[in-house]
Length: 198
Image (cartoon, rainbow, N blue to C red; front, side, top):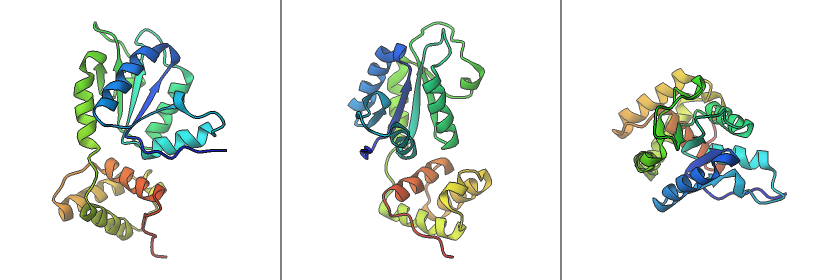
């Protein structure tokens, strides 16, 4: 059973009926130098649940392509729910040009018509710039100070805010707490997350 381990910046979620729009979105991110995970490209024989979990953990953003005339597919709903559980930034892309009516659970996320995909790509690219070695060292030190495992941290918004505030004070750089948690998850996947003192 193989598990893909390549790094991706964006998790692309869509139903088969939105394949053409998804191809356009994937190309826009790829041309900007961002790696795109697409479940449709998972190798046969892979454990799809493991692959999806790892991809969601490592990606910086989740882009959901929807058809505004119908409910998203059940697979898209599962991926959206997992992205919410991972506290990932979620963006909605659609192909419509007129008035858009989205289900209430999608209305809270930034929404882009496909004609504005370049704006979304620029924003995600800015947010995926890697932390410097010095910033990673600061984040690792703060993680040890908090003494809260990263999985537990995901369910503690107040601690995430504390982490972001302390990181800003020490690094003189403002980064969202959710992004810092994502970096901790990446460190864990790479096997370089510092252990907590027992």
